[in-house]
Each structure stands twice: as C-alpha cells, then as structure tokens.
Length: 223
Image (cartoon, rainbow, N blue to C red; front, side, top):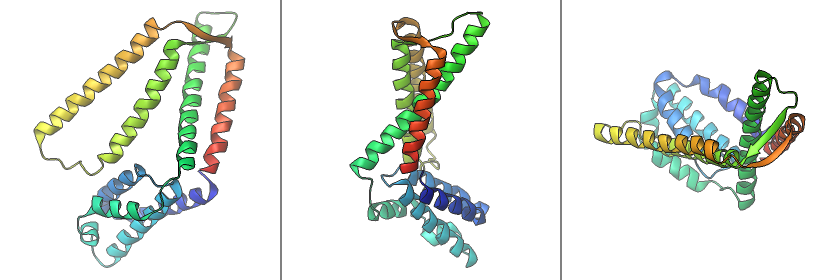
C-alpha cells in the first residue's frame, strides 16, 4: 500500500466512525463487495470515500442508508465500479506477485517456528529446514483456498438475507464438504509426498524468509 492509498485509507477509517449503527451493516456489505472488484486499492478507497460521504450527508438530513440509496446497494456498487478505471495487466501481475510472496513468507515463518520447536524438543544438534513435495503442494493449496475464500465472501456480500432455509443448509453442507476435501489433500500430501526437495540449515532458511518479506514489502509500497 503506497503513501497516497495509506493516507486515504486512514482518512476513511476515521470518517466511517460517524456512520450510525443502523447503517453500518449495509455499508460494510458494500465495502466488502467493493474489495472483490477489479479496481485498484486507490480507486477502491476513492469509491469508499464517496459512499461514506453519501451516508453521512443522508444522516444529517435524517435519512437512513436505505432512503439514500433506494435499496439498490449491489446495483449502485456495480454502476460505480463500471464507471471507474480498472486494473491494468501490469497492476494484476504486481498484485498477484505481492499476494504470492506475502503468503510465502508467512507460511515460511510458520514452518521455521515449527522446525525450530521440533528440533529443540528432539534435542537435535543440527537444525535443518527440510522442504518436501508435500510442502510445495500444501503451499499452493493454502494460497489458492485463501484467495477463493476471499473471492467467495466478496461476491456473496449481499446474500446475507437469504430466507430460504433449504438453500442455507445446502450451502453449509457444500462448504463443509469442500473444507473436508481440502484438509484431506493437505494431510495426505504431508504423509505420502515426503520426497525431499531442499535441505538447508535453518539460519539460511530464515534469511530466505526475511528476503521474501523485504521484497514483498517493497512491492506492496508500489501498489
């Protein structure tokens, strides 16, 4: 997040505190939906700023968000998104690399802590960081699933009022089935895909994770 986006983000966070409680749920749904759009972070914050001002101006007139926007929340969001400049191919590539590196250094840090703790418990004299085929598979599965969850949440932001109990049960069972499959893949790959791809001293692994962290932060500042 570059300086311009960060300043606007902080300004919006401060300004949105003036939104009344009865307007916050719909406002939150609109912003969640906006986060799943094809707009840059800066343009998302510009749109967010406009939405906040619309709601606050309506409150000052004694109108709630429903009256201000006529209940057309998703349609209004779509119209705004359609009118705004979209991410370029370069923007999308940089964003993908940033997300990938961010997930990579976080998972790497977790793996380092796990390896270090295991070595201390087993009282090993030589701390080694071992990367297997299963670890690679799990990394890609976790990154893919995390992004899929975010996309699902943003696209379903306005579906919270679904009154069909049967559909809710089906959706719940579908989510649990998918989660079970994912955890099964992770566990099975950890057990059976044990071929070692990399075995290095833990200090070197720590340097690599730190390098990934620094590179990700440098890229993030440019977004």
